[in-house]
Amino acid sequence: MQGPPHMLNVPVSLHSTSMIHSAGVTAGQDKPSLTQLDESDKQTMLQSRGYSEMLKERTGHHLLLTAHRGTGPTSVFGSTFPERYLPENSLEAIKAAILQGADAIEIDIFKSRDGQVMVTHDDEIWRNAFQADRSGATLPDGESKASYLVGQKSVEELKAIPIGRNGETMPTLAEVMTLVNDANQTLTQYGKNPIILNIELKDETAVNELLNLLQDAAQATPLNNIVFCSFKHEALKELKHQAAERGMGGVNIAPGIKTADLFGKDNMNPDFSLKDPKAGYHALAMDNLRDLVEGNGFQGYDGILWDLREPIVDLAVSGGKAIHASTSDFRQYGDNRDFTHVLLELSKRVDTFFKCDNVDDARKVLLESSILLNGVGIQLMYKQTPDGEDCFYFYRPNDQQDISHILQTGASKPIAYSKLALK
Image 1 (cartoon, rainbow, N blue to C red):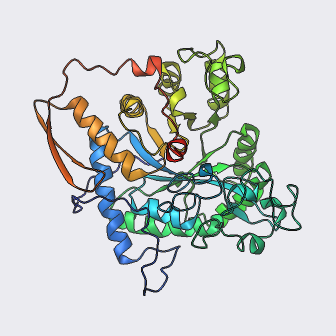
Image 2: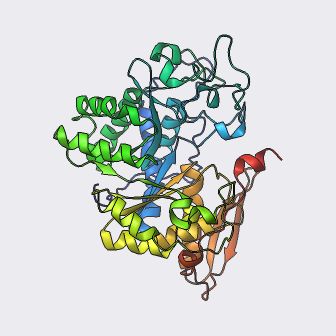
Image 3: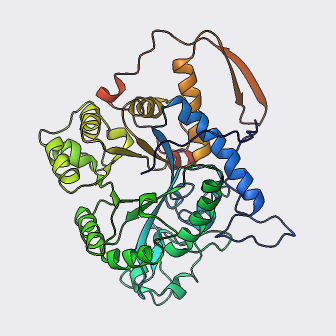
């Protein structure tokens, strides 16, 4: 992984950089390329990176924002999703995240029947097809749960299935790489760190095809600009082994760590929550993780934000590893700032990638929390109301506020935004 990014004098506007619709098309305009940035896109990306650099300055250059599935999961909303969101893992959502100034982009991959590496969260097509029954109870004519799978369809067939209301379709990994590489050319030109591509290997049978693609594009996509993750740990070991046999060094891997890996299955409820929210890790958890990560030469740990505690941080620090802190579909945090407190504490000690659903929103909340916690005297704060009006207020930081305990107790888990939105 490359070192801390350098600060440049990029003009920064006071307006919001929320880019959920940035990949859309204005009436009367030609459809823009989805795998290239135009000059306006490049300026927006650079301006947004200026905001991100403010956050890095306040967090010792250890905190990076990773766009989760582009601009966040949409499959969690059911057969449709709010109109203002772009479909997860689509080129449109990934491009929007790039324009928000994401440090990294997280995507999920499966292999098609004809050996193409496809970007999608699920093998089950009905989980992501637009207006489909997410339970799979109602499928297209002639299809069954055994046939309506990514692995059972050709790339041509998959490209005919819309995943969004505007006809968006499932991209190939090659298309996503072309888009990210195009953005990275501009970032490199301006002396900024490239976007990291965080590839989650969902399909253990796709290792060979994945490496073939990366090897063909080695000059355009350096391996040190990619981080692989997965809950399929044996597939990650195979990925590293095959890469080494091909002479592909510098493979960064952060295995996914499940809640049960840390707290034990006996401490889990059926909905994956903890029976005891104050429970600590089970006795062998850290030994098992050390064997997994350090024993296989992996780069770091990919854990759920709400599961992170002091022992795993100590383990990462002692081994010189990074932490990838994931959320599910939390877009609105309200008064719950626990997630920012965890991230700000982590960034004091270890390189931290925060997988968030909206880079712009997360960056604003993190910046504000950092100012409130570390400010001196009376702070003049600015917010925009839900109606879009400007709001200024004075804030006096609480000198006695201490968040160091947050990694001992863990962050409280808020209500998922998908559930809030359905109320």
